Image (cartoon, rainbow, N blue to C red; front, side, top):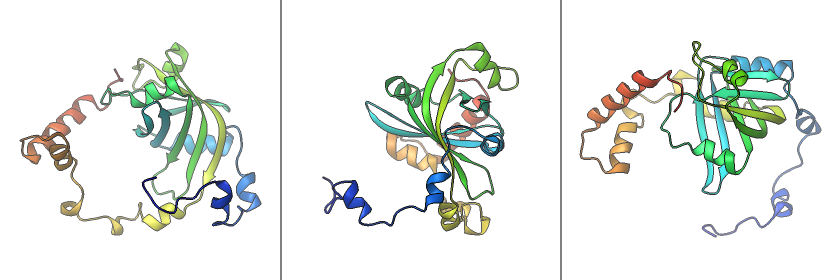
Length: 210
């Protein structure tokens, strides 16, 4: 164990916390109702968590509100826009279809959590449902919904994520260019890396994945 005093089991865990309120348990449903549909259709951003032989991965996905399509009350789908082609999410789904989603809506402190089982599909109908500007992606991630519920606002209230007054000044923000320079060991100035990143974003932002 990398840490001392590890909690040994669920019984030991429960000794540290009170039981959840009955309403917290009742809010979990097994389908996408009208309220959940409205949340998904308003969301431009979702975090997708998957697990495979190499470990667990959480991947951000974004698009115009509604880029995740509600096919019916039990199925969601999202298209695959251009990324880094590591395919971590995809290969995990092939090994283990369990998936967790957290939908965010800017300015809304609550989030929508969806858990279920994912499928990589090349179905033309599903790809049409998630097309961007009429361009179908090579595949879509379909999710069979097993659990769906609203998550409370405490994390966002504590973080002040949507409050601009809490945001760091631009010069104090972490730099992806600096991180890449250190991680890869590039002998290139961060400004050059940043410009290259931006050029790539502009070129492939709305390209279907692949």
